[in-house]
Image 1: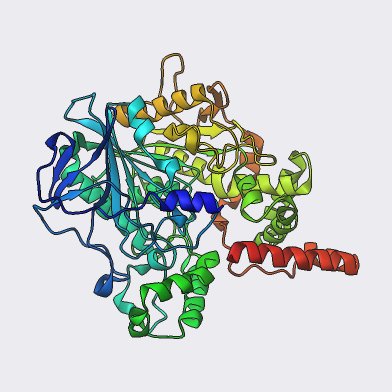
Image 2: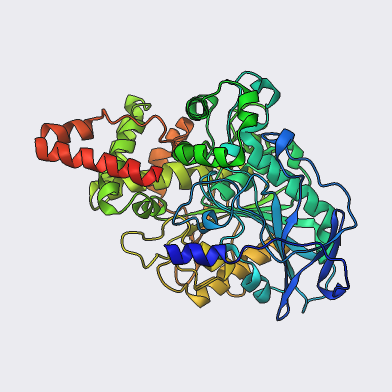
Length: 553
């Protein structure tokens, strides 16, 4: 792990002011300065461009403000800092230097294509709204624009976790910070405003912007179409393994606030604002396990986030959305291996069953009977459906039913890592063309499949139609449920896993998420183990300890 840390940290640098001569062919003149990029072959990268004022001092936990106009000339060689987060093995950007001053973006363009109005693709990283950053090599855009010189690619940093998604209303003075539960989304909107003003400087068409993201990024790009402040800033959306379902109620967000009060030893905003950046980082280490998702606050995000899709409010945006067949298997690695996964997933499952009605539970029972293999894989498939695939289907269905254009995919090409299958995030190396980034794939990604995926993504960004030569991607509707299957050779199918969909679809109203903050271990699975004797009790106690240790490291 130290080699990964050393490698990512070695890429850090500070972009300096340029006072002498510079090469105008690798520069971009923007409203807040002239930025000098680096050229690699035909690809020019611009890294660490500020898109908002640093959210520090009096701006801590405040909505982002636009950068002031400037004529300064500055290098754009290095990524901006990662947002404050706990270091985590699968979030490589967490090893990059962190800080509150993290609102920066990166741009890649290919000088071989001199068009002035290229389609712009803007990527928002994942990380469960508590991790991630633009410094992750998985998101490097060089290979992407080398393959597709008619695209401008941009990756955006935004506040996460303690600094980006925290409800401060319970603190004295917290009423002055109403945006705090959804600051990361407001950061993304400010980045899109900057892009709208400055896309032309890189040869981009501000009227043809596609936003895309995975996991929390997929959730973000699903939420942005329903936020009035973001209207007109993008034309298309690609949501990978994320939807409006990745949100919390006010009640679910409360636990994090109570824990912050305890760890910070203050009940006032005045006390929070006096905390140093180092103190915030230390507090965050204790809280990162309890991170919030965006809050359905009724202010920025409605209590029913599907409603704008049902009302046709999103109809002016084209949407491509999909999930992977084994999303939940990602957590085999995240919580320390197969044994912790074996013991933890039934605890989560039985907690979630408590909110279901008798009829709902019967549906779940029938669903589990459809599955094969060990009970942990049957429960994993339940979460594949409830947290990922069915919310994506609902989003696409309501969008297409009410005037919008939608496309659906289902990724089945597996990781080479044992027990992962087509897990959460496995498609990212394929999408970016970073085939040697094997953290989720387990081996070098397949070149042919990667070429097909990036061509589909870029065709959609340019034209609104992801079809490629030889493969017609049909629009999704409730009548055809047309779905692109991403296996080694992509192909179309209709109404994938229809029986599972019909059984569990009514359960969507429960908004089952990955919230672990109030997980109760007093459930039948644990009681049964304990009843099995001291050996079983010791096993479950050790497993619970291991899970907590892994998640809180």
